[in-house]
Length: 176
Image 1 (cartoon, one colour):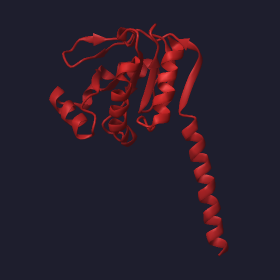
Image 2 (image 1 turned 60 degrees about the vertical axis):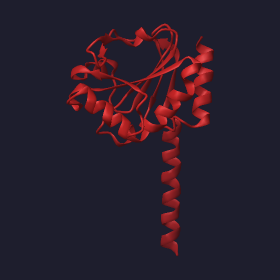
Image 3 (image 1 turned 45 degrees about the horizontal axis):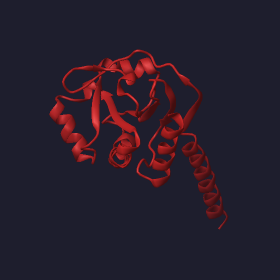
């Protein structure tokens, strides 16, 4: 009985630590940060920068097809993007170019994981990721209408939850 009690206490301790990490995933900056002039590339090979997305709040998710949390994020992120499209929030994906043999392979992969509506870009030689100081995926960069970074979300979250959708819409309204 004593052993079961100790295991139960250890489980509770683990869950409390885990929930603390879950709450720490959102990092909003007190002042917007300058974003380096780094490029990522569309399917046609055209170069883009984070500031190229106009008046929308840009949620740029850096991800990898070899990352379990990234894959579990795809379908909820697709649903989130559909839910906020008319609220001035735009979602894009940025993945390492070396993971894909073709644009068609990337599109089929996104469709297979429930994200056919997400626009995806490529990071050549991982220069975008390293230039932004991103060490793990998924990492979502929150970019305001002026092309400045206002926050980051690291790790997988429930993008399609009403709470997240409401928070992001309120954030967009606050920033504009």
